[in-house]
Length: 280
Image (cartoon, rainbow, N blue to C red):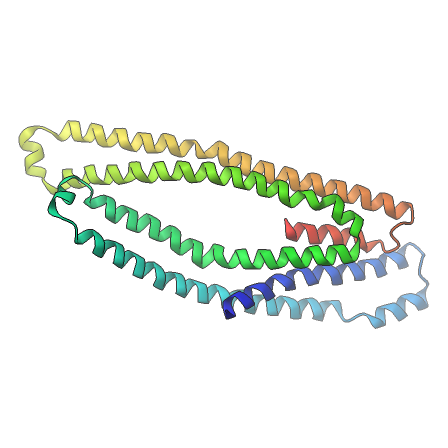
């Protein structure tokens, strides 16, 4: 529970910096454009908290919270993965001898290693980022509505479109990765049979056939791995294209409303874009 609270608090801190930056930018822009006098600028500047110290305190708190929940999640992921691997290997060793004669013994070790690494990476890194990103997204949306609600409605399509692109590409990547792991497990079984009984292999002249089959499995895994390149290209290109298109629309609409005097604080569009940059 403490880990989740630390991750949520670190996400909120990232959004608060942009709100303070927008207020400071509004004050400076009003003075440079002549909309504020010297006395009004000094009076308004004295009412604001020191931006350097406030940003430093928020950054220090964000570092402490992020380091805390990352360390705790790493330890929890290490222990959980160790227990899962121990139970998985123990269950494999309790199988009958015919199970290992079928060539599935090395597949157990390969799956325990690769899948355990995926579980450990997901818990230690991605689980904390899910809570932190969710907190940042919710707090950024709230601050964006408080800053300028009409710009928030204009750019509200960025997150659903990005999630749609990420969901499609992640599904394709997961299907390819499953097939690659299966081929790697089969290749490990062939390598185990070659290295486990070298005398039998040389006696029957099976070395070339086994090497040919092993090379075929590895080439198939390599070809499947090459299919990931267009998937990742579409994922990153689509995500950045959607984000930049939304930011361009937000900036254009914000400047137009500033020119029409619908937005009195000139720092609102910049602060709003920074909030949506965090949310995306």
